[in-house]
Image 1 (cartoon, protein in one colour):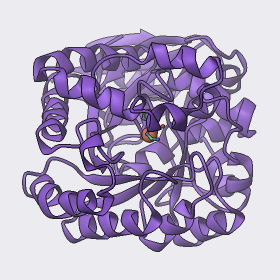
Image 2 (cartoon, helix red, strand yellow):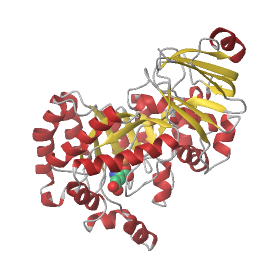
Image 3 (cartoon, protein in one colour):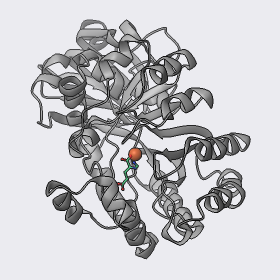
Image 4 (cartoon, protein in one colour):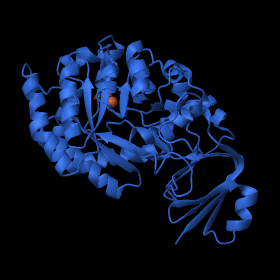
Length: 415
Ligand code: NIG
Ligand code: FE
């Protein structure tokens, strides 16, 4: 048995609530903050949360370790609900080209972009991919992230998709971060299937999805529904087929152009729709009605030099919003969820409280992990971040800085 008491936090943002499911509208502002708070963890699980003056007399004497969080904010570990963290190589060269005027889609259509990373990922050995991804996950941890969703999709042939999914399985066992796998065979149409897009769709449906499900390699099934990539019809086919196998749909929707992705997310009852930079008013309404979480990626919008998604409007219209890095080599190489929270405030007009909810509890809901992580409540994992700011408002206001002091994963100090 091992126990940890963190005491005297200037603010302990618990994010606890009696509301079930992802938080909407004003629920996103209710952080349930305890001033001068304390939290007690036993064997990796939260045993008690409350005022220091109540928890200290009860637990300090028996605790194996006591941490004084005076003048510090304490929050749940951050949840990054959308990444493509397993990939080979770098695309720094394309970054320079885009700065000189080339667009993301132009580069992809010339065989660069996702295709370039696919070539580099196919060439990498499983051990090389493991090592490169591990380094990125270490960086996530130093930025306060303790749970990460991770997509395949840089294989686009079974051999390499499987290699990516295996790397995720190994990391889930060997790295402290909780990794939640998503199959994204439909990330682009590989060069060898050019002009035979429907054949590739059938290949995913008939040959890949059954094995992903049978071998329990992923929990979610994601599709890049975008003009020039997969049409809404093709996306729907792939997502509905995945549902037959128990894979929950997610959609990269309306990232570059309005294409009916948000509407499709509502139609197939996706757990979340991602990006949504160009989502239509109707699509936003449909998502609110169907209870689809908007997983917004403001670092991607910034890196692509695009207007951010309409996060403020989505919250006001009743859509539950999560935020994520989208970590990938092309459109968002960052591992900084604190930066993503800052950008959510600055570029999408989320309030500091909404941004914290979006990066913790609602992120957990977007990957079906809300019973385990995303808030500091008795019985949940002791995934905790201590920050060198006194309030959650300061965390969002003092932007572009990594304020992490310490990170605990299931009660073990990692940072
Ligand atoms: O979410 N849009 C599609 N997929 C990623 C980018 C992948 C890449 O460029 O390598 C995204 O932005
Ligand atoms: Fe993405």
